[in-house]
Image 1 (tube, rainbow, N blue to C red):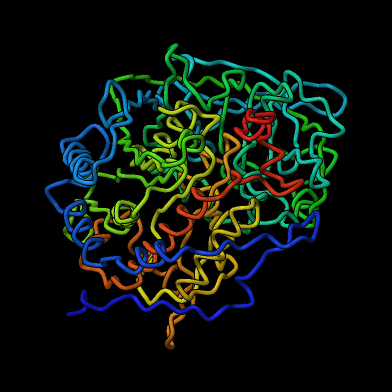
Image 2 (cartoon, rainbow, N blue to C red):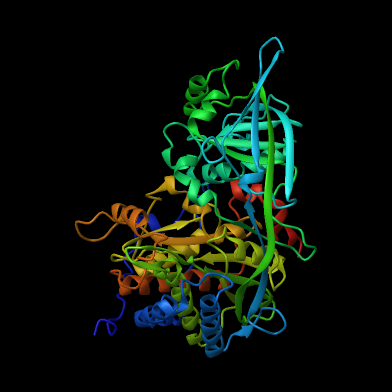
Length: 571
């Protein structure tokens, strides 16, 4: 009987959901009206359908849906069947629903890798070299461009390793690092907004390479226990993957960085011996968000040996609902959710299959139900809707990055992205955190959908988790495409604290075999997520104008050259 319950729709307006001022103009973002046909379709959501999709995708027989395995193939066939049933046009390669994603595997050969540290006194006297121990003092990232990489260079400390003059901060402003190895703290200035901070933390290698560095070594602040190599050694010793373009070039790598290393806390402190500023002074300056850079009186000699393999090809699944407007049907709103998970690993509590029910059978299931709602409309939206189930998210957003970089439709015609990944429906959905809402004009569609469904819009309750950077929508942001990623807020309607529930789940269940269908999912909350996904995409597809970045937005400016809106100027 619980599935006969129609999702109640509250139309009471919330003051938080009516409009969002543009930070540059103070003009409110328009909130579009939802036509009666779309309202009727939204109310036709079937929570039972979400559960059914999840039951199949998270079943033991799919063996955790790891790319390249029989289990992932079964999941891909299931999504294909749903696309065919819905009447979607195949938009993969060769008239199929599939897009191949070639991947390169790399893992450090520890036995052939080494790091030596040579100190130099203030008067130029070179001291004896000290050999570091792999796994204790340092860990290398693999080199994707060559099996053996060697470098010997002086080391320069560059604070957080962040160059963001648009945010009033630049560690590289007053130092030349050409031909040198840069050393920096993990993290970014706490004065940055959380999304900008997360991006700045993730882009250290790119920034170092742009400034001419030949290597980068990072280490955590003493207070950041989770970033230490002691905490991450098992994960850091696993294979790493990147996607390969049609010319055989590995992407999202920086070949000019001949060494990429993480240092243990005690080892990092020794780098500052004899420097112009001791470690603790550098730490204090970082805590005060002060840019800093100065040479360290030492050089590093490093050899990284890497085992490379191109034996894995992932697959994205792509289905199209053609638009109805003669002109706008050649523009696309893209829904994305990742189909893959971790596969079979060492047993935890007697179970070795990582079913990935919440991560991310839930996102795929909700998007499939949203796709069904689109087919109930008496007339398709003006713009076309593209549904993409991507591979290799767990390997570093690789499937979505490949699709966003090599879409099966003209990239300049992709106007928006909606992502769903672990939306968290373990309690009633009373408020949402729409990551990305503050960056573009998609805020209007989000607020209209939230008002219709009857949910508040809340601030990010866990900014320290850097959620904005951690799912497939960011692959589209990198291409200059506005994106929205909706997750549940913290309001539960009872005495439970939603934030504590979320953090507890991440600590005990996330990326373990216990993420299965034996969890207390709230299926009516899942149905509300469907309604939000459907309505946000529908309103975006119906609008006269494509979404745009807010004037002066950090991400809109950062990725302006890649922006389809820039490509389409003058059309």
